[in-house]
Structure formats: structure tokens, C-alpha cells
Length: 110
Image (cartoon, rainbow, N blue to C red; front, side, top):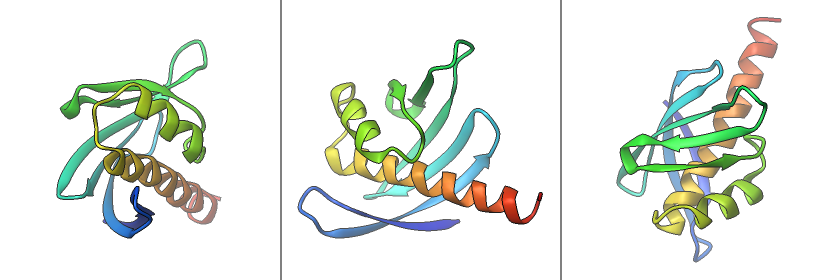
């Protein structure tokens, strides 16, 4: 499990945990935050655009780069009924998972 931190809508620092299920395309992670679990799938469609899917919450949206937290949060907030704190947790978890995967592939795989 990978721990991460994010700010809720009131500016309070909160924490969550990530479990990376697949570090390939599509990226698949489980995010635990705010007492909830989110099964998140992020990938690239055949014509190049990126997507985000949270099947257990019936959520889907376009996605920018995994580390583009501002755009991803804005886009996801437009297309979901998830509480904004949960959106922030998922978006930060994606960016954190991306950082860990990049580091692993750089250090372990050369």
C-alpha cells in the first residue's frame, strides 16, 4: 500500500492509501480515502485521448495526464456526483501512483 495526502475542500490535510493493481495501460488502482474505496481505471483510447473510469461508482470521464490534478479534478467534478473531497482524493491518488510507477520503472527497470 502507498500512502498519500491531499487537501479537502476546507483545506484540511487528509490521507489515503493506494494499491496498484496494474501499472500498464490501463493503469488500475484501488484508492481508500474518506472511508470509501474507489476502483480506478485510467488509460488511453485507441485514438489517443485518455479516460478515467470508476466502475464501482458508475463514473467515467476524459482525463488529461495523470499528474494534471487541476484539469482532472475540474473535469471529474463536471461528470460525477462524487463528493468533491472524494474527487480530490482520486485525482491526487492517480498523480501519486503515476509518480511511484515512474520511479519504479526508472530505478528497477532501467
